[in-house]
Length: 297
Image 1 (cartoon, rainbow, N blue to C red):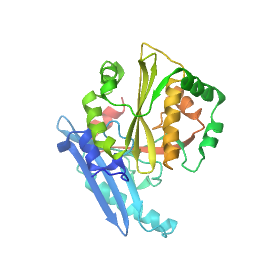
Image 2: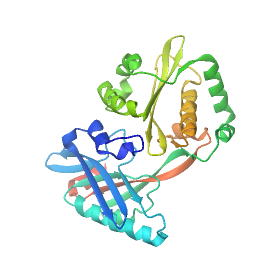
Image 3: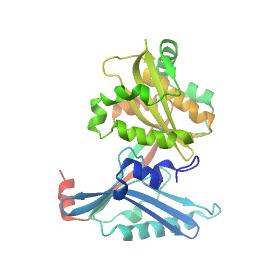
Image 4: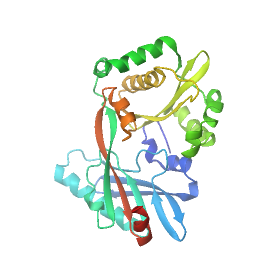
């Protein structure tokens, strides 16, 4: 069950929200005080079954170690054991996808001639950085965008879905990506009472110009979703909402994750907030010949 301290994105309830409940697969393995959790959405491609990380989910595996006194090799050995055990359970599937947390550094046990690792980066602000330093670390242009937004826009920090429903439902991009108001409503209604989701809204002359959803998972606040008004452009609308998200994370002594992008323009924007890059790994295993052929195109 999702609670205030849980890793939201690696919870059976989350997978039931973002994928059909009867199609989610959740695996928990334990070994010598360490625990691996992995979740998947089960899909079918003709006669072939495969597993993927659900949409709108930043990661679908974690390994936690209860014994903090273990030395480096002991931790490594336990992670290798757990990953090998997971691989055995995944052998019956023709394809699987795993998105790792940046803190999961051991990926070699996954790899074989049909399983590859692809590295990406996300932008991240550590919880230990004081809010004043966060502000000073930004590019001056980004600070100016924030100041302009604070002066010229109305910012709501406790937005409701009802006031943005029409704004979301007419946005073509998010329909194309598989987002629906019904999905947002499910996620919002489950997480809102527990204080794990925030909706920030920027308005210009009572017109919505930008909205942003932030989700807390463990000790990290994620910049989960952003939707902009395609007809009304307003300087500073995104920057000021992100800044409010960073302040929220700092207030709760949490990290802030931009849920990064390797799209050059977006990465440049996120880096302008003084964030640092963290590498994470996307593992793709094509055990069936047909999937191997498809992946070449």
